[in-house]
Length: 82
Image (tube, rainbow, N blue to C red; front, side, top):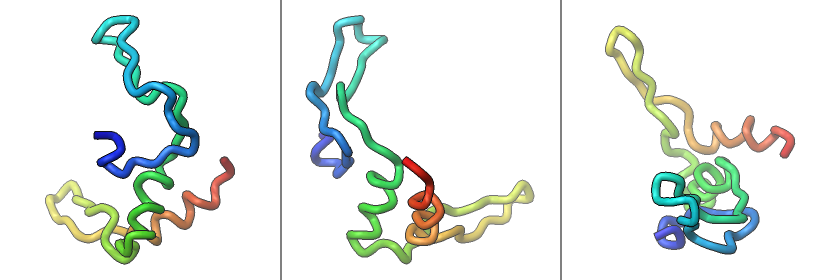
């Protein structure tokens, strides 16, 4: 399921699931590292969805409208230091 989702890791996991402390304390993708831009923003830009709306805002008065695009959202995040 993790591979099918297209979720990206900077460092791959060595073990998918660790239940050694019991089910309530399950640990997933042991040893992996990732970040939001890699898995959510960059992937969608690479797949041609950079111009699509990234989120939709809704005001307290119930009005809503389109927010920033995926490409626009990735710019300030990508400029942050690692």
